[in-house]
Amino acid sequence: MGIFDGINVAEGAMAVHRFRSEIAAQNIANIYTPGYQRQEVDLRATHFQAALEGAGNAGSAKGANSLGGLDAAEGAVEVSRVRHVASGEYDERQRALMATTDMMQAKSAFELNVKAATLLKSMALSSLEIGRGS
Image (cartoon, rainbow, N blue to C red; front, side, top):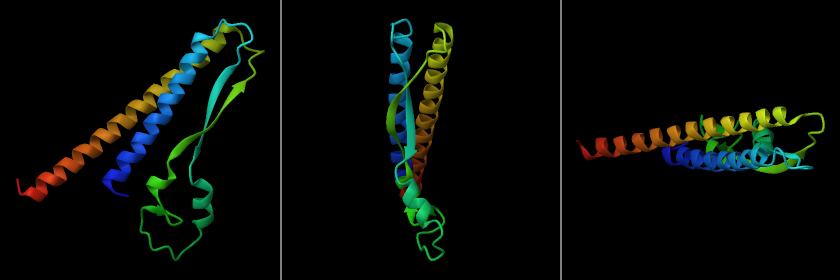
């Protein structure tokens, strides 16, 4: 996996976690709305099943950064669906706590992916400077 593949993976992850933040914000905004059901985002690897099927291939010539012949960048995460969670057993305080926790998790994951993308960009720029002979 190259530097640009890593940046693409981080970019895709930031989009997913931004979407998770939007769903958490909707949950927080509708805590006191009668009949509103909390929403949850389900995530899945985009090519996970193909990676599992190809994992047993000993003859894969893709190198150490591959799983079953798929580059790591191809195994990125995407939103598989948004589902409604029945919340009849929870009171408003518990729903607020769950929504806030979801928001904090999405924010932390987004920030980590920003740091990863920034680090990869810095590595790419350093590589260019080394190649220039500075």
